[in-house]
Length: 113
Image 1 (cartoon, helix red, strand yellow):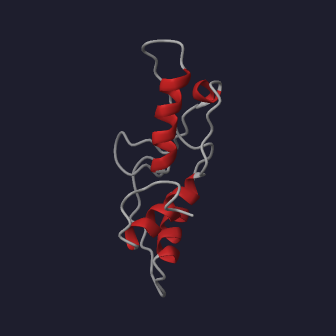
Image 2: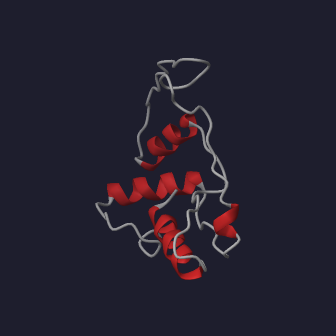
């Protein structure tokens, strides 16, 4: 999830909820695997001839005991208030890498354009 989506979701929930206290899941509407994330980071960094070494994992692909292999939160509750994320998971990764590399560490949707 990109940081501007996170902040926007919090602000949206605060201004659109009729309750004093409420909990919402926030996130993107998709999933992305670690292999795709790694390749995206390599590409955004402009690296060539990078070898990716897979070190395995436990229990059919989890990184460690207790790790969640696949995760996607239901964001239907916050969406019912009219909020949706701007960026998907892969876009969020790419924008984050671009911001870090440019040392533009103020992560707003305006900076990512």
